[in-house]
Image (cartoon, rainbow, N blue to C red; front, side, top):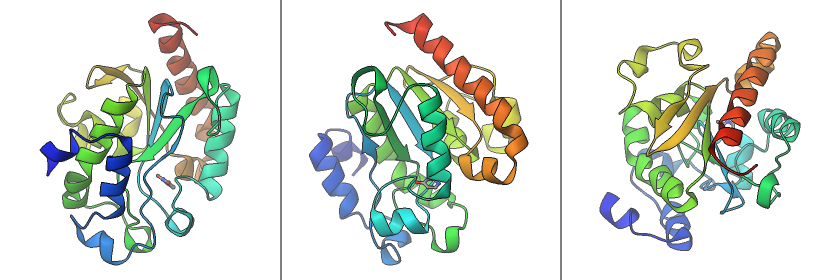
Length: 203
Ligand code: URA
């Protein structure tokens, strides 16, 4: 199946996700949550997994954490309806909601990984913003030894790489809702990401 997924175009991929039964989450989901935004965006934001609101609406980051994410993106001139220099694509590691918002399980991440990998290949973003532990672990598992046990704080402030695309790690918006004092650090991460963009291509 991963080989098939790796050859899909956007529409085929979205359909494959919609009908996916690769793990047990398909039994409890209301909707799959594929991703949203400009499919030619230079920025890709990767979160963890759909929550209750996302499961109902089929769109990532539509709850309270999503409002905060939208504000973070606005601060750097991006929005989920934007195109061109304002464009961003938003996706999650898992495309289905874990019941009661429990943490994603390794088997679920493993089964879902080819979808995100293909999204990255199709999008060809110039930068990836990995929000939270699960996004960081999933994207950096092959490039950062020991990432599975590394605190998020240790992964921040550096430019990592996924499939040749620069990756900046920052806090998850849900965490920031509980820990607003870390918003300043998040702003520093966004500034680093903007620096990388400026250095890497036309702004
Ligand atoms: N948290 C996430 O990581 N993703 C969503 O889509 C919503 C909340």
